[in-house]
Image 1 (tube, rainbow, N blue to C red):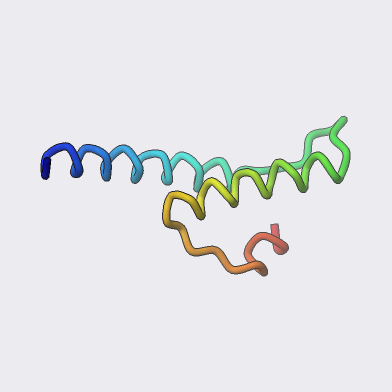
Image 2 (image 1 turned 90 degrees about the vertical axis):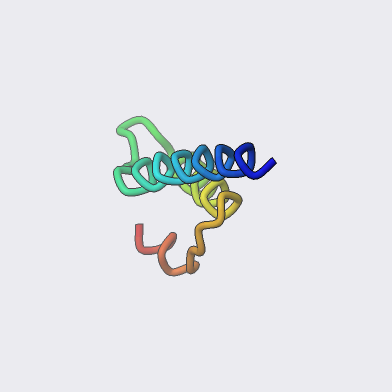
Length: 63
C-alpha cells in the first residue's frame, strides 16, 4: 500500500511540474479570442489547484 501511494505521489508531482511549465509558457495564440485564452488559462490553473498547487488570484490575472 505504501509503495502504491508513493508511486501515485510521484506521478502527481510530475503532472504538476508539467502543468507549471505549461502555465509559465502560456501565451495567447494569434487567432485566439480573449475568451478562449482566458478559458485555457483557467483550465490549467484549475488542474494545478487539483494537484495541490496553491495559486493566488493575482497570479492568474498577472499572466
